[in-house]
Image (tube, rainbow, N blue to C red):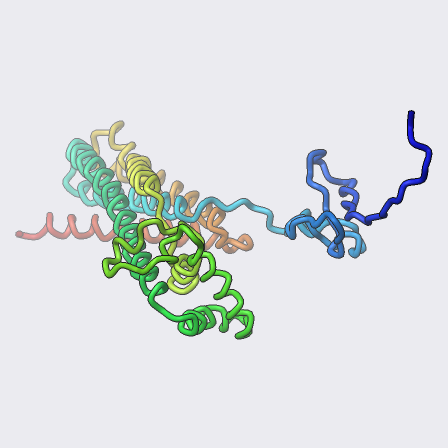
Length: 325
């Protein structure tokens, strides 16, 4: 039997999410909360937006820029550009130079030898370069962490303000940021809560990855970030394959003709077209092209570099062939 006597109740105003954008195509989109949301439910900051204060009623996260291209990882783009650029340029210049000797067989044999050796060399070079970058970062992380643990709060506040001050952050805010980051590294269970050994290698053991003053100073003060181990292999494979794919293009016409000069003519035409396309695509994926002229400049400049290298190689071989050397 239910109780009939009155009960005392307390009314609590809870935050209510705003209505989803009616034009949104995603039914599972998270609700957008008002900037003034408060009460028993406190939504996280990324879920707040002043969409109802805007005339169009659209959340600013849903607004699209005029240029909505999706850029590829700059590290991958860099490796692809290095591999393809060298692959299109170096074998093209080599085959052009060997064409002065007269037979396509010499061009094919020399070109294939250079192509395989160049692809392996470029891949190994990419691996070693990424490995050196990773090792340098780890050394700087150990060194910076040890310095952070030995330094007083005032010294760290000066270093943080040296990073944040030039971009408009005032000194009290820099001090607050320093306090929060230092608190993370002084957390119980963290190496910073214990005396720091003299050996920097031992001092770095147990270091939290990506949080605290050490990664802040490295990333924003030195411009350095951790290089994952898989990045070493991705870089090697990307550069090596890029060189192999790019290098087979100028060599391809020589398989179908016995006359080296005729093969050179076809190679110039095909490689020139590929260099133009590659330059335009490079300008697109890197974001360098803002208009039509950006694409034109990217295409023409890339073809000019390859053409100049090929012309220099061919002229040198032709000059040596005609001389008495």
